Amino acid sequence: MNLEEIMQTLEELGSEQTKKTFINHGARGLLFGVKVGDLKKLVKHVKKDQELALALYETGNSDAMYLAGLSVKPKLMSKETLQLWVQKADWYMLAEYTVAGVAAESPFPLELAREWMKSDEEMIAVAGWSTYSNYLSITPDELLDLGEIRSLLHQVESTVHQEKNRVRYVMNGFVISVGAYVTELNEEAKSVAEKIGKVHVDVGRTACKVPLATDYIKKIENLNRIGVKRKTCIC
Image: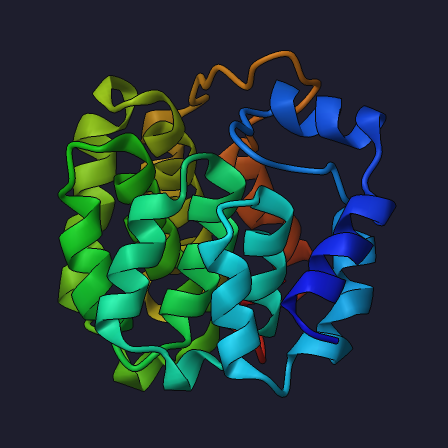
C-alpha cells in the first residue's frame, strides 16, 4: 500500500466516537479516530517501507503519526528526524508513546531523553521522561547509569508536584519504571514512591486515573517480575 491508500484506509477505519474519545484525551488537529488495535493491523503494510512510515508522520494526522511510530525501524532513525518528530507531537499519546518508544530504541535514547527532559515545552519534557522510562524497560541493568537514575529519582521526589500537568504523570511513571525494571534501585524507587504519594493530573474528560506508584510496584513484586525486561517498548 502507498501513502494515499494508507490514508484512505485510515479514514475508512475512523469513527466519530473514537475521534471524540481521543479529543477528550487531548488530541488536536487532524485525526480520523482510528482505534490502536486497528492501527496495529496496518503495520504489516508499512513496516518494510521506512520512507512510507516517515511520510505517514509527516502528514500531521494523529492516526497516521501513531501508525508511523508502530512501523518505523528505530535503529534507522536519525537524531534530526527524532527532533522533528518531538516538535510535532502535540498531545500525550504521540509524545509518551510514539516518539518516546521510537527514541528509546533508536541509537540516541539517553542523549535525547536528557535534552528533552529539560525542556520548558510540556510535550517535549513528557517525551523525554517517557523515553528514559522506556529505555530502562529494555536495557540490561549493567548498561545503566545508576547514579544518574538515582539523581533523577531525587529530582522527581523534590519537584513532581510543581511540574506541568502531563510531566507529573510521566515523572510518576519514571518512578514506577525504576522500581519495576532496575533491580538495584527497587528499594530507592519504593521510598520515593512513598514520599511523593498520590500525583494529581488533570486527565480531561476521561475516566483515566494516575497509578499510585507504591501500589503499582508492589503489584509487580507480587508477580515476581522485578527486573524482567521487555523485548520492545513500542506499542
